Length: 183
Length: 183
DNA sequence: AAACTCATGTAAGCTGTTACATGATTAC
DNA sequence: GTAATCATGTAACAGCTTACATGAGTTT
Image (cartoon, rainbow over all chains, first blue to last red; front, side):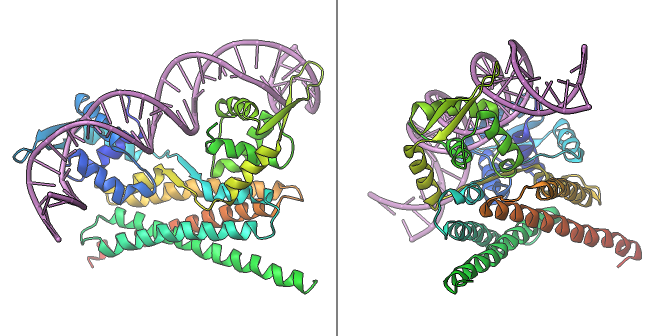
């Protein structure tokens, strides 16, 4: 069976302890979505595939009338996860519409087009930053160190981006008075 | 006709002057791929769709036996591009495998697993940074200001990321001697 | 009683990549 | 003459999202 990236998201999520599909989705939405999102439409079919391949095994954990299956890694699943994590290669793809709009904003030949776009970019990064701060503030004790590191990375990166936008906004705003003074 | 994100990449690329599908791909590969990639498999069919919808028009620019079509924006195409660029909303999706591996690296219970992953992350960002520096060094005069701004953003962001990795690497490397000293 | 969270899943469709196919022109 | 670049396109497939469907338990 061929494993894709989503397989490893699930193996990684389950690696920290038994989880249901719902739990995996909750972890993704709280944490990994900032750098790797996943939907139920991927998670549930993939859990089945991984179980069929013997990388995870499910155990019924229904309570009363509410169905629930907890999955845990098998030895094969642990090995697959470790091999993946040890391999150095890693892709990085970004679809950043804010940058796309800024890039093409010269097509609007309004003098403040770029400034407006940088402002929008700042709002975008500030929104993510505020979500990350919220996560940092509500994080329970005992968050594994690598996960904390990734959160720190996110806080730092989006903080940098907000500061960059503010700086550019000042630079661009300073241009207008210059023009009025005729310099 | 419904326009997707790729439609606007093409409208934006053509907005700066008549271009062929090949030209659009070259611009994407040189510039936008860092925040929005596109393949021939999207570009050529989309050019046809946009032409059928009357947003761009093609002009035959074949030379001898080499076929070539130059596209330019129609008035409708210009309007569609402007409307898009003025709308404030913008999505941002990231698929960053380096962060994913770092996030789950506690599953490898080797003491230096996270350190190794941060090193790999630094290499990844350093590679992109070097590509961006190359672009900055070879950029001709007269690059539109907004495009320069986006390049600056990329240089700054990946520069920040490399510095962050270096800092974390130092922190993680300092831990080992502490353990040996028994503190 | 309504709203919310827990819980599992599918089907249709959109987006995008990869690999292939073809051929002309230009630079070495 | 051969390798690189210019130039256009398609078909199969992979990956992912959205919307829908269903129902139990919990909180207000």
